[in-house]
Amino acid sequence: MSTDDRRRWDAKYAGRSVPAQLAPDEWLVENVLSLPPGRALDLACGIGHNAVWLARRGWTVDAVDISPAGLRLAAGLAGRNKTSVNWIAADLDAFTPAAGACDLVLVFRFLDRVRLPRLIESALAAGGLLIYETFTTAHLARPDSHLKNPAYALGPRELPRLFPGLKLVRYREEALDDRSVARFVGRAG
Image (cartoon, rainbow, N blue to C red; front, side):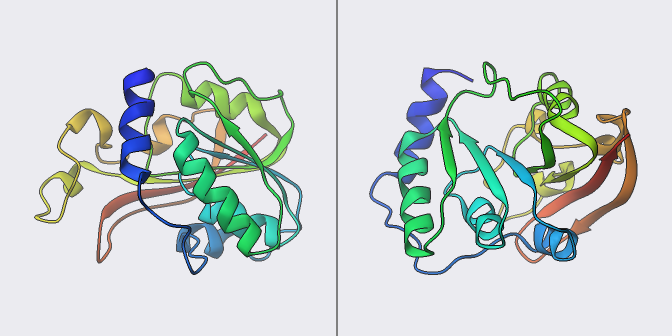
């Protein structure tokens, strides 16, 4: 990432208002509802729907994003939902979480094949879960796709291969109404 990335994301969020409703990703909800709260790390959190949803359920959440503008919206969403999240404005190319500190790491709609797998596996506590969802190459062919660069899309069965140190819990590749994604849940040993 770079200053250009931060500017691009800040421009995307400019002029937007705090979301009126909390809308966590269904893959997160499906895989976390039965878990006891612990410490969570939300990477590339955007405007914070998933982080706020977790915090409302008693999780202690650190949420990282490169865009201060997005994090301002996220903080507004947390305030609207009367909860607290530790918002961290940082470039994931330089961010290093505490080793073994997280019971849960989540990533949605973001892909960094080089740095993210090591960062995530280091951050997870023994028994901790990774919940990950991002675009596949099938998304590139969709007429509603905003994604044009194949470097930011996963090939078939690629996502589990990025995390060889995690035990596969669940994996799916799906064409949803608005996106084509790979969905992964892995557990640290």
